[in-house]
Length: 212
Image 1 (cartoon, rainbow, N blue to C red):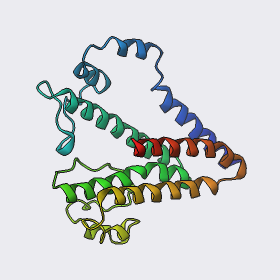
Image 2: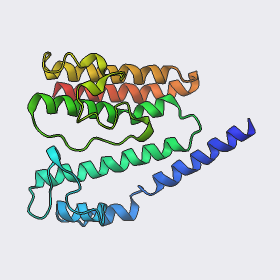
Image 3: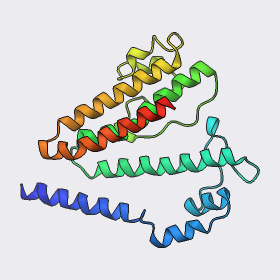
Image 4: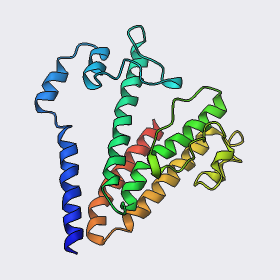
């Protein structure tokens, strides 16, 4: 028991250390001085280049539009989030299912990107890399929809191109949140009571996005 407590104390300290790098104070004042999206991108992601993405997300370099650059900055930011989540999970001998499922939101987004690509013919950007927690195989894009076999998305293979995309998106979102809720409810009662309001708030926000 003592070893387990020590292990969680270490993870807790590491999480605080990682999050501390995101603290704004002086950094916020520095960012407020930015006068262009390109300047902001270079400040947030030094040495990463001005594009950093391809396909549907576009480039966003010196000659790119603001819209392309917004997508570019967003993708770089989310890439850093995925990397951080994978790193946090690596601290656990057996990662909590709730945290694993939070990371797997990006696997669900990978699947929807592949479905949209098939329906529209528009090339999709590179898929999010969730490491060993990935629900889709590495060749998911090249071998779609056959690559859905033995994944949580297998049942949608026959529906792609048959059901309206909006219906598939709704069902996939509902599946993700049903599984997220199940992970939250499986927590000890004290932990579940703290997580439940956060989950409910996220679902409300997601519904608002759908309504819009």
